[in-house]
Length: 173
Image (tube, rainbow, N blue to C red):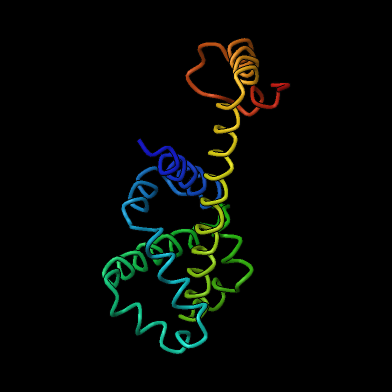
């Protein structure tokens, strides 16, 4: 049982649904990619000044080249779907609007959108998962806090199948 991996998956699901505006089928497809490995490989390729010039070639010859290509195609589809849906509001549509992609859908802008999505994935899910893991660890170290938290959850939420924003905001502890 790797709690941190479970929390990372949870954080990614929340990020993909709430910030990227993805539907469940797209979330599940996104989670099939080895995101951490690709993200780390891309980060290393694009932050090392020696590798920046050959970053694309490095990715093409890496063991993740096929995954990077499939992920790129997946992101192209998501970007196109969201760019063509004037009612859709998400972090991706905000990036699209700021970039001018709707007016000039050139390759360079598309690549910048993908890179920004990768930055959000890298920063967003790691920090969220680690914050949740730290909070769970701290609760586990303090039985009095566990009891108080459990009592409040039981009192305010009871047997509810899911939480609402109002329920969470109504919690004092």
